[in-house]
Image (cartoon, rainbow, N blue to C red; front, side):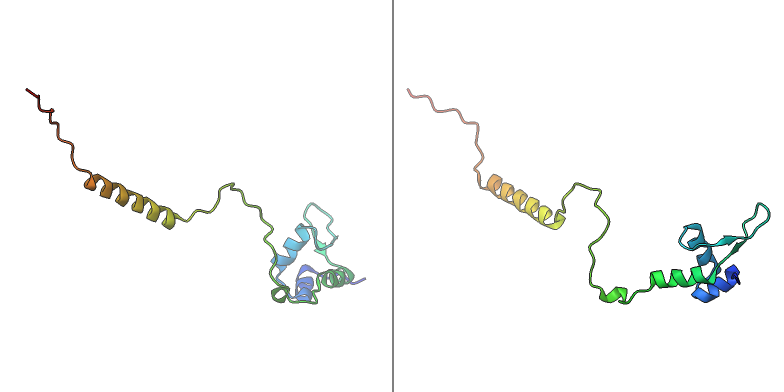
Amino acid sequence: MNLLSPTQAAQTLGISTRHLRALTDQGKLPFVDVSAGNRRVARYDPMDINAFVAERKNLKCQSIKGKTKAHTLTTSGSEVVDIQALLAARKKERQKDMKQKLNKKPMLNKKPKAKI
């Protein structure tokens, strides 16, 4: 059995050794530890590399699968508010109040005339 070094395995997959290491650390790509000491020395079985490729093969391009629903949940219970509409309504209400105040005749503090 000929095991592949990380560089050879990465070249076979067409990825960087850094990405290969990340896949290995995430448990997505099996490896053989051939170390004798504390430091890990990883080697890769070509059959595992081929199985990894076969498992990840897509027959359809991601971009033509159509839109998918977002997988994230909203963390807010708030609703979306149209701020411009709120400001316009507030401005209109203020203008209406000002017109009403201007149209009212000022009440003069006059005492009724006494009848004699």
